[in-house]
Length: 369
Image 1 (cartoon, rainbow, N blue to C red):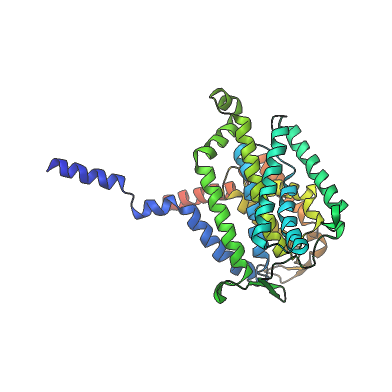
Image 2: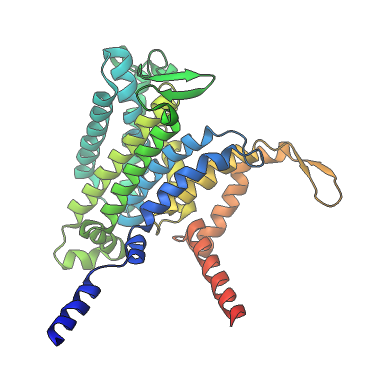
C-alpha cells in the first residue's frame, strides 16, 4: 500500500500541471496574443489610424530580435547587419524580376547566402577584438553597398533599386493592402502571412536561447575568459551566433521586399545597422522581448509623433502647434536612449517596464494586507 502511495506521489510530482505547462510556454502564448492585438491597436484612431504599420513593425522586430542574439546574448557588436538584411531583400527581388524564380527558392538562396557570407566574415574577424570587429563589419557592409550601387551585370539596378515585377504572383494589392491568394479568404491578409513567419522565427530564436547552446552564448557574454578556461571554443560559438543572426536578418529582409514591393539600396547603408543597434539597446539587450519593445517604441514614435501637428491641452482646450518640433522625433528618442544608457544600459524599456510592474504588484499586495 505504501509503495503504491509513493508511486502515486512520484507520478504527481513528475507530471506537470496545466498551469506549469502554460508557464513553460508563456513566451509563445504571449507572442500569439501580441500579433493578434498589434494591428487593431495600431489601427485605432487614437493611436495611428493606419494598421499597415503593424506589418512593418513585425518585420523589424524579427530583424532586431535576430540581431540581439548576437549583441544581447553573445555580447558581440556588429555594425554590418544591414548587408544581411539587404541580401535577403535583393535575393528575392533579383530572383523574381530577373530570373523568374519562385519566391521560396529565392528566399532560401538569400538566407543561405547571408549565412555563408556571415560565416566567412566571422572566420576572418571574429577574434580581432570587439571594437575591431564592429568597425570591420561596417567596412564589409559598405563594400557590399558599393557593389550593389555599381549594378553588376545589371542585376541590382544601382541607386534606383528593383521595383518592376519584383513581387510574386500570389501577392495581390489593392489600394496599398496586400493579400495572399493561396490562403483562405478570412486569413489572406498579408499581415497574417508575416505574423506566421514572425511567430515561427521568434519561437526558433526562443528555443535557441533556452538551449544549452544559448546558455553557452550567455556564459561567453558574461565572462569569455572563464568560458574559454572551461574548454569552450568561444570563437566557434561566436561565429555560429553571428551566422544565425545574419540568417534571421535575411529572413526579415525577404519579408520586407514584398512589404515594400521591391528592393532599395538604402537597406544596405550602415545607418540601417545603426537603427538595429539602437532598437536593441532601447528595448533591453538582456531580454528576449527587448527587441520587440525597442522596435515598437522606435517605429511607433516615428509614425505617431511625426503625425501630430497640433496638441490640445486637456483642461484649457488651448491648441499648441507642435508639428515643427516633433519633426525632430529622433532627438527626443535620443534623450530617452541616453537616460537608459546612464541608468541601466542592458535593461532598456522592457527592463524598466518589468521593474515598474514588480513595484506596482508589491504595492498592491501591501494594500490588500
